[in-house]
Image 1: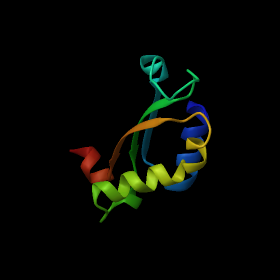
Image 2 (image 1 turned 60 degrees about the vertical axis):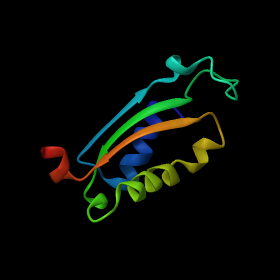
Image 3 (image 1 turned 30 degrees about the vertical axis):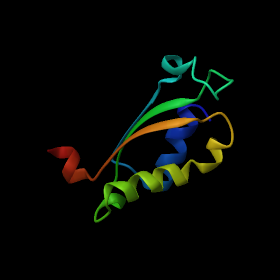
Image 4 (image 1 turned 90 degrees about the vertical axis):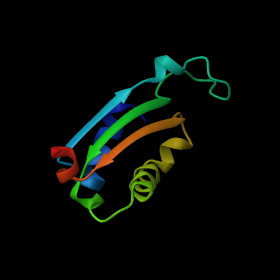
Length: 90
């Protein structure tokens, strides 16, 4: 799953007011256990009303769960920033 596919998929699920997906794969090209070097590591910043009332760990779990099929492919790791619109505005 590439940057555009991740962005589309998360947008479809979370209807974010802000989303930014950065492909950080090149920074991790020599990691053990990752034989491929493309579309492996991403930084995801997502702001959604769906996160209101959720603990941070639950927000991260929901983003990871939304991309679970990608983890069986090339996706290896995500760094997630998940905020509500009020948190993002501060």
